[in-house]
Length: 166
Image 1 (spheres, helix red, strand yellow):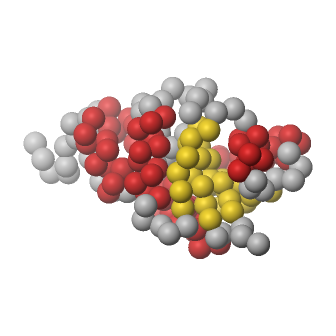
Image 2 (cartoon, helix red, strand yellow):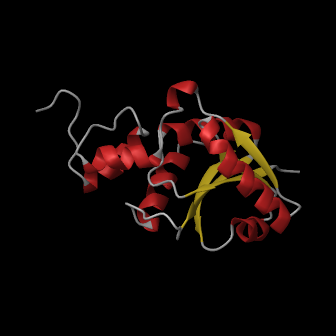
Image 3 (spheres, helix red, strand yellow):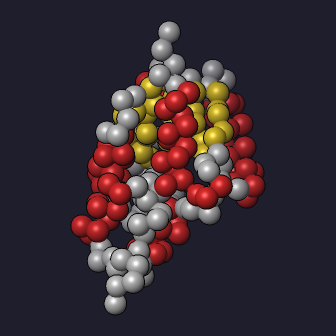
């Protein structure tokens, strides 16, 4: 039986930390779906379509990863996809309380779902989409923060200086 997992989030944008977690998940599972939340309580810099395009480019580098968008509850999306494993990334201890609460809520809503926590390399543990968005808004270089294909998407929308450029 094929094991499939969903790695869901806003991914606004996908960072190297997200990418690292995705690499780890792709080695564990036969198939991984990067599931982009269309609407969130967070205000997004990029539209769902832009985030899906970035995720699709990232997914194209893997044989067993695909990108998709969803609306509503993640547990309902997982049921529709017939997937019973959710991947969540933990960067730092500060993430744990929120992620633990979400995992327990999802378990209450859908007892058949399991949540697996994966940590990125420590060199990416400080990265967040929020940090990347702030650097982008201020015109800074994000080369060391996002996958190259994601940087290309961002550069098309925002003028970004490379390190050392005046």
